[in-house]
Length: 299
Image 1 (cartoon, rainbow, N blue to C red):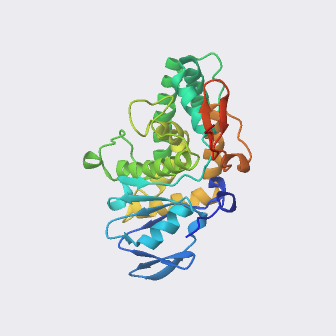
Image 2: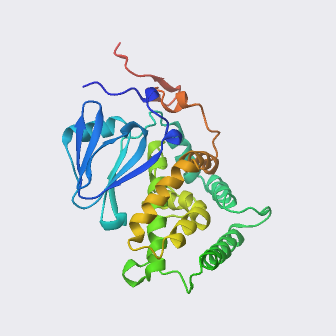
C-alpha cells in the first residue's frame, strides 16, 4: 500500500489537536478511521490530528495503525486519565536538518547556554537582559509561585503548595498535574513531529523528556493553570481538563506557537514546509560533506 506524500499532509502547526479515547475500538474504513464507543461510532479526522491518546480498554486494528502512522499521528497508550503515556510516532518531518541543529546546539556548551537563555526569555514579559542563568532560574521560580496564587485567587480556591506526586495530591494539585501532562503531550508531539529528540533539553537535563519540559513550561502559568483551576471542582476533572485543553489547542493555535518557539529555542529560522518535508537523503563524505545517495558508487 502506498504511503501518503508528506507534502500532501497538514503541517503540525495546522493540525487541530488531540483526541482521547477510553474503552473504544478503533478501525480503518477506507481512507479514514472510525472509533466505536459505548456512545456510538464516530469518524476520526485522522490527517488533521497530532495525536490519539488511547486509554484503558482501547484497541486499534492493524489496518488502522498503518493509516495512523502514514498520517504522522502519534498514538499514546495511556493510563486512566492520561497521566502516564507510552507512545510511538512516525515523524512528519523527513529532513533531519533541524535534528542536526538541535544536537549541535545541545552538545556545544556556549550554544546550549544561549539556547537556555532563549528558552527562559520566552517565559517572561519583562526585560531579562543582563541576567545570568542562576538569576533566570530564580525569576522562573517566582513566576510560578505567583502564578499559582493568582490562579487560586481568580477562581476562589485556597492554595497551599504544589504537590506533584499523584498519590499525595489534593484535587487541585491533581487537576494541575492533569493539565501539565496535557501540555507535555502536546509539546512531545511537536518535538517528535519535527524530528527533534525529546531528551536533549537545554534547561532540563538527564531525563528522556527534558526538551519536552523546556517547551511545555512556557505555557504552564497561563494555559495550564487557567484550565486546571477552572475545572478543579468538576466531578471528573481529568476528563474536563482534557476537553478544555483540546479546545484551547485549536482556538489559540497553540501547536503553531509551539513550533515557532521550538525553532526560537534551537536558534534556527523556521523554514518553509517544503524544506522540512524534503526527502534529501545523502551519503556522508569527510571531505565533501555529503554526496548523493540512491546511486551505485562502485567503480
